[in-house]
Image 1 (cartoon, rainbow, N blue to C red):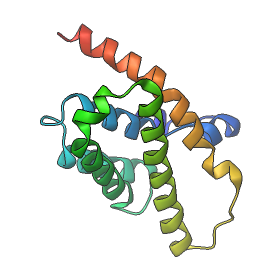
Image 2 (image 1 turned 60 degrees about the vertical axis):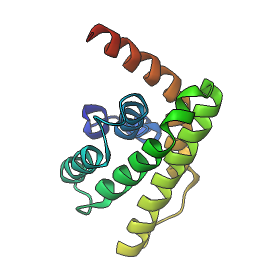
Image 3 (image 1 turned 120 degrees about the horizontal axis):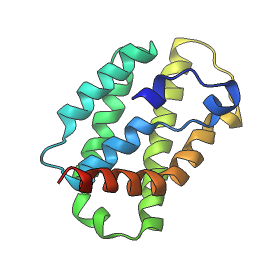
Image 4 (image 1 turned 90 degrees about the vertical axis):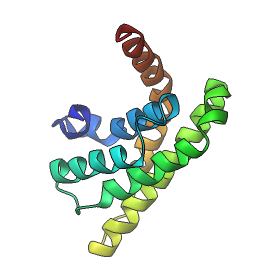
Length: 141
């Protein structure tokens, strides 16, 4: 959660992916019965409070993406890394689209291609995040 709310320079904050959803998707794929929709909803509420967004914005999208990951966790774990990355791309696109929709309802937003850049960096970071979280999981055993 620290990487999501840390004050980075403007260049890094533009490309900073949503690390929290990457971790939520990883844990719902690996342990779907221990980390479910309710856990993602609570983490989403904490993210809403810490980032100053509308209460429930991240909670709704995190719980929805967690649910989608739980539904297909048996198939998704079997896929190679490239196909998992395409799933991550779709999840991050849904998240950014939802946030853009909510922000456009609240005020006039400027459409910029840089807004969609965290989707690409998040997809690329999925490989690294997955290996790192797998290493952390094996240390905990």
